Structures are given as structure tokens and as C-alpha cells.
Length: 222
Image 1 (cartoon, rainbow, N blue to C red):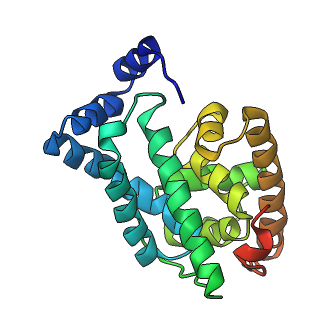
Image 2 (cartoon, one colour):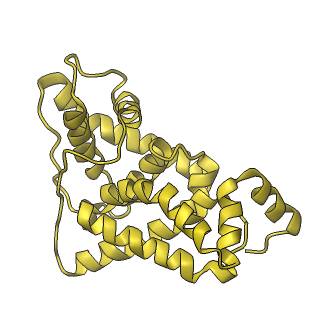
């Protein structure tokens, strides 16, 4: 991608993380450490939802940062830093899922703790159901229910939902991350909300926990 000097300057002025990455490009180790501190927890959260394992997500986050460091000399400020970073994360997660698919392994390891706050979880529940459950959920139960529901989505729908709700990315930024058009992202998120509603409806109506019935292999193009 060819990026004009004026565009690169605009991103550098608008995004403090782009400015940090430009310092990383100039071999500023402290700037790289700062980016890791800012993004490590967020990366692990998204990656855990994508691959279904916290331990694997931690390993993949390390791989993402390693790729960022290796690519530093060729870095060009052509997008928001978070968009560039999660594009790398998406590629790393996709490679891990393909590798796991070849080994025919299925790992879904629910956790009761993690860096996820309640607000984006509320947003996913409300977007998919139009209402919250009649009874009050504690944070651990909410994390568990949302994790199971999101895990039931196809890989592309899952990533779009995570970037929208956890990273609060615009359609345009999600499109850049996933290599799609903004209209395609809008359609993908609409289908994801519909699928989440279908998965969560038994829980809202009868208290039945979402079940993950299909593997990522079967939903890869969802």
C-alpha cells in the first residue's frame, strides 16, 4: 500500500500510538515497552475469544508483538496503530486455528477471570437480545455466557463482533483489519447479531446456557 506523506503525517499527529511506533522504528526500546503495556491485555482478550484458550492467547500475543518488532523498520503510518496491530493479530489467530484444525483439536476453556470489563459484555448482550436477562447476572456469569455465545459464531463474525464491541472500532477500521469493505462489515455484524440472538434466546427465555455445537472448521466462512 502506498501512503502519501501527508496521510502518514496526519495519522502520526492524530494517533499517539502511531507516534510511539515511529519511535520503535527508530529503535526506541522504551516506546516498544509502552506499546506492549497498552495493548497486551486487549490483545489477549480478543485472541482468547478467537482461539478459545487463554494460555494459547498469551502465546499468540507474544507472537504478535514479535512480528511488530520484526516489522518495525518497514513500518509506515498508513492507518491507526490499533488497526495495524489487530490485522497482525487476526493473521496470527487464523494461522493458529488452521494449525489446530489440521491436528483436529478442539479447545474451549472458559475462565472466570480476565481483563474484560462489564460494559462491552453488556453491549453484546443488549445488541443480540434487545434486553437484558430478567435476573441480575454477576460479572463472572456474564463473561461465561457471552464467551459461549461468541464462540458459537463463525470466525469472521466473531472477529467483527470483538473489534466492534471490545475495541470500539468503526466499520472502516474493522474493514481494514479484515480486508473487507465497510458495507461487508456492516452486513457481517448484522448476521452476527442475528446469530447471537438465536444462541442466547434459550438463555433469556428458559435459563438454558448456550451450547457450542459446531467446530470452527464448519463455520470458517460464517
